[in-house]
Image 1 (cartoon, rainbow, N blue to C red):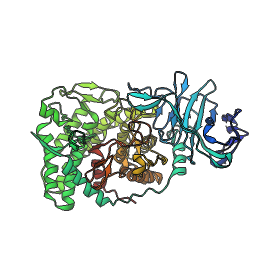
Image 2 (cartoon, helix red, strand yellow):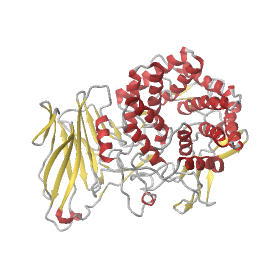
Image 3 (cartoon, one colour):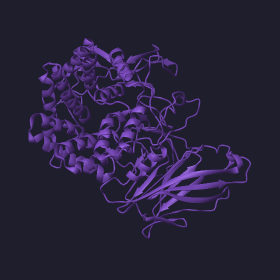
Image 4 (tube, one colour):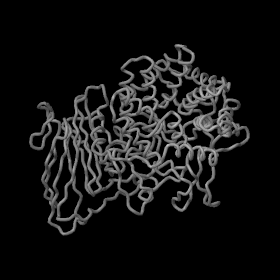
Length: 615
C-alpha cells in the first residue's frame, strides 16, 4: 500500500504534507493538470497547455513548479550542483541563485533531464522532465516555505550561461517551436521518498529516470576490433622514446602550423597518461598474440619508472618529463601513485604467468604502500599530493582514497596487518566524508572542485573490503558510492542540431558520464568503474548496474576512429578518440575537444583485458 498520495494539488505522506503544485494565473496560456501514480512515490504529472495565438514562437516561457513543504539540508542538480558547489576555488556556478536570481540550466547540461533534488532528514523529492519535441530547463529556487522545483519550457539558461571553467556567457532563451492545434503536452516526473540513511536519498529518483529513459544502445564495434585499434593507437601514435624514457605520450593534439597531429610532451604514469596501464595491456597483448614488440614495449615502459623515477621517500615521479628535466619542484599526487601501485602489482602477476622475473615491480608497489601507511593521520586522512621529498603539499580532497585499493592488494601479498588496518581506517574516513556531505572532491586533477573521479576508489575499495571481510556494511557503502557516481551518468538522449558535430557523430549522451562541477562535458571516464558496477550487480542482484555498465561502454566507444574518421576537416588515426564531448553550451558548443588523449584507449584496453564482453 502506498503512503504517498495526492489531495487536489498537494502531495502527502501518511498525512504529512510533502509539497504542492504551484498553480498561478498565466495570461498567455490556459492549462489543465493530471497526475498519475506510476509506482509508490513516483508520479507522472502531465500539463495540457493551450493558447489562442497563431504563432507559438512569440509566446513567453512557461513553468511547471512544485514547491516542497520542508527546508532541505541538501540539494542537487545531478552533474551540475551539489549542495551549492561550496567546496573548491573555481568559478563554477555557486549556490542556487546568482544575485538573487535562480540559476536555470538546460536539460542537456544535467545528468538527469532537467533533474532537481531536495532532501531533509525525513523526506526527499526529485523532479525531472521528459523530452517530447520541446527542449526545456530546470531550476531550484529556495524560499521561506522550502524550495521550488521548476521545469521551464522552452529551453533557457539564466541569469548567465556557464560556458567554460573560468567564464560565463550571456543568458539565452529559445523560442517555442511551432505546435499544431495550439495545444501541447508537457510532462514532469515527481519522485518522493522517505529517508532512512542506509542508501543515498537520491537513489529512487535515479532509478525512475533510468527506467523511463533507457533505450537500446548496443554498439556495432566488436570488442576484438576495439582491442586491435587500441593497441595500434598506443604503438603508432602515443609511443615515445626520450632520453631515459620509453613509454607513451599523454596524447596528441592538432598543430595548426604543421597541419598535423603531434604528441604532447607529457609522460604520466596514471590519471590521463596511463603509462602503467598501457604497459600492462601490451604485456597482455603478447599473451594473446605472441607479438614480441608488444611485450618489449610493455616491459620497457614499466622498467623506465623502476630504474629511473623512484624517490627515496618510497613514491615515484608521476610525470617522467620531470625526471628528464631534473625538475626538483615536481609534485606527486595520490591519483597517479595509487594507480601506479595497483598497476605494478598487476604487472608483476602478468610477468609471473609468463615466467618473467620482475620482483622489482612488486617492490615498487609495496614501497608506495609503505609511504601511504606513513602518511595517514590519526583520523584516517592520507592526503592529495607531496613534493619529491615526500612532504605533504596538499592534504585535502577525497583523492587520497586512490591509495586504498593497492593497500588491500599489498595485504593480500604480504599478510601484513598494517596495510589492511590503514585501508580500513582510510576508507572509513573518506567514505564518511561522502555520506556526510553528499559529494567527493579533487580527483579530477586539472580542477579543484566536486567531481566524479574521486569517488571511484570508494566503490572499488568497498567491494574489495567486502570480499575480504564479508562485512555487509562495505557492500552497502560500495553501493552508496556507486549511486553517487550514477549522479554523473546521463540518463537521457540529447537531440542535437543537424549542423552540429555531435549530430554528425550520431552521439548518444545516454550512459556517458560528465567530469565535475567545473567541467561540464561528457567523457569516457566511466570506463574506470565498468567492472565494479558489473560486480556490484552480481553481488546485489540489481540488474540496473549491468545496464548502467553496458551503457557506459556503448557511450565510450562512440567516435573511436577506424583510421578514416574525419572531424572538423582533420583525419584521425585508428583507435584515437576525443577526451571531451561537449553535450551542452560549454567549451565548443555541441562539438568535441580535439584532444586525442591516452586514457580512453588505456581504459578500454583495461576493461577488455579484465574480461569484459558486451552482453
